[in-house]
Every structure is written in C-alpha cells, then in structure tokens.
Length: 351
Ligand SMILES: NC(=O)c1ccc[n+]([C@@H]2O[C@H](COP(=O)([O-])OP(=O)(O)OC[C@H]3O[C@@H](n4cnc5c(N)ncnc54)[C@H](OP(=O)(O)O)[C@@H]3O)[C@@H](O)[C@H]2O)c1
Image 1 (spheres, rainbow, N blue to C red):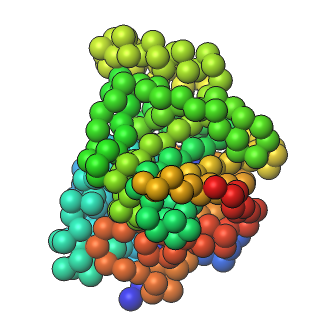
Image 2: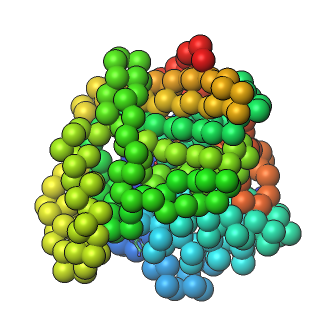
C-alpha cells in the first residue's frame, strides 16, 4: 500500500495550514485542488508534488487516488464537495478523511457504512476541530458513566476562516438540530440556552446544529444529545431573529451578498492570533438516576487544533491503523486520542 496521502483543497486556508504543518512533521502530501496556479505556488514553496483537477472530473479524481492510501479532504462546504470524493474513494478503495462539521454530510457518509466495510475502506469524516475533541470528550464521559442517557457538549472558539463562515451562511436558514430518542430532531435556531463554565466562569451558550449531534450518537449510543456554542448576547439575538427571517436568509441574493462580505475579509486568523488563541470544550452526561459527570478540555486555537488532529489521524492511517466502514474519531482511536495532541489538557469535574 502507498504511504502517501492526497490533500484536496490544499490551497484553502485550512488545507494550506495542514500542508505547512504536515511538512514540519516530515509528511509529503500530494497537494490537490481545482486552482492550478495557487497549488503550484504552494507546492513549490513546500517542495511538494501537486495535481489540479475538479471534483466533476471523475476520471481525474480516480487517477489521483490510485497513487495514495488516503485522502484528507479539506475543500468545503462539504455538502457540495464530499459526495464526489467519497464515491471516488469507494471506487478506488482509498481511505477517506475530511474536516467537515456538517450533520447532513456525516449522515450521508454513515449511510455508506456497509458498502465501505465490504470494500475495506474507512470513511472518517470530521477529523478537525469538529469533531475530534468533542467526540473524544463524549466517549470519555460515556466511559465515566456507562448508564448515561443524556449528553450535552459545548465549545468556545475564536475567529472563523472564510470557509467556515461560508459554510455557516449556507446553513443559517435551516434552524437547529438536536438528537432525541436516537433520532435527529429539528428545533428552532438558538432553541435552548445554558450558562456554561468552561473553566473561567460561566458564559452564555446556545444550541447549534453541530456535527456531534450526528457523530456522538455513533460513538456513545447515548440517545439524547445537544450541542452548545458560547455566544455573545448580540449573536444569540441574531440567531433568534433568524427563526423569523429564515426564508430571507435562504435566498441566493442574500447569501451571495453575505459571501461577498466574507471574501472581502481576512482568510482566517493570523499566525499571531492562532498562537495566542485557545479553544475550550465542556461535556456533561446524565443518567436516569440523576448521576452526572462533567469534563473539560482546554485546546489550542481552532485551526491549529484542526491541523494537529487531522495530521495525527492521517499518520495513524498511513501506519495502517484503520477500521473499515463509517467511523468516528473516538471509535477508531479511543477517547484519549485528543490527549496525544500538543497543547491539550483534560480535566474531570465532579458530578
Ligand atoms: N470541522 C472543522 O473543524 C473545520 C475546521 C476548518 C475548516 N473547516 C471547513 O473546511 C472547509 C474549508 O475551510 P477553509 O477555511 O480552508 O476555507 P477556504 O479558505 O475558503 O478554502 C476553501 C477550499 O475549498 C475549495 N473548494 C470549495 N468548493 C469547492 C468545489 N466545489 N470543488 C473543489 N474545491 C472547492 C476551495 O478551492 P478554490 O480556491 O478553487 O475555490 C479552497 O481550496 C469549510 O467548509 C470549513 O467549514 C472545518
């Protein structure tokens, strides 16, 4: 088997960060994407090979995958890019990893579990900020309280990249999502709020339709799941307003306007912002007898964390540590995977 991987979307903010950190770790990814000029410049600066092709060019995607053991897919929004790459991975028996956080993408990939298993292919979406830390936290809490039936997860993060902001704009009119009785259940935007202490005092947090609503169920089997994000009160009220403006926010003309504003902004946090930034995660499990466990993770800034978790996982894949079928990070590599990442600390708070 090849010991190389394809990094698709390598010219994006996150893909480029992963390429830079990957080279520092001694990895030699083949850079890929649809922008030949940007890829060529990046590849030359890092001394790497590159291949430019669009995801619509099925033959070119297949040909690029034949040379590698795995793809790390970083071109999003994944609701538009994941399907052609997953299908190509199944055709060429290549392991698939991505950095999505979109519930619909996790669920679409989960539906391919049996086919992937029969082909010996691992499909592991969500190897970044979403969902590695929270998925590991969920699995850790489930191990602390095996009788748990309710799981709440929350995170506090810093500045977003253009790609993350674009993905959020495309989903802003869809409302919220939780899991109830094992079933994905639509709720209104900012459906519930909580005051959550990530370790430095309580802050306002509200429910969002985050990836763990999908993945934590596969990792833990816990039937009731909610995910919260720490928000300033103006953000919370904007989310509440989106309940009434959903139809407007879904219009192409409004989304195009928002995307133009995003493109006019910075591509993502600067190196200094990433060096100084932190991200924090909180998780709580409850069981029917009223038992409760709470744990916290303190982590590096979100995009640095994404690069570190994605690369740590790709290194394991290249070393042959794979489990065919649809997977979540903690199911394959365990709840303590996150503790292998530089700059991460976990603490258990008594119930
Ligand atoms: N879950 C997590 O933890 C996490 C962390 C970071 C990022 N993300 C997600 O990762 C994605 C990328 O983020 P980013 O910050 O790198 O964004 P970005 O800087 O805007 O880069 C986006 C990349 O995706 C490519 N792309 C977009 N649509 C494509 C398509 N239809 N076909 C082929 N390539 C396409 C772009 O190629 P062009 O340059 O050719 O347009 C570019 O390489 C976003 O969806 C973001 O939400 C998730």
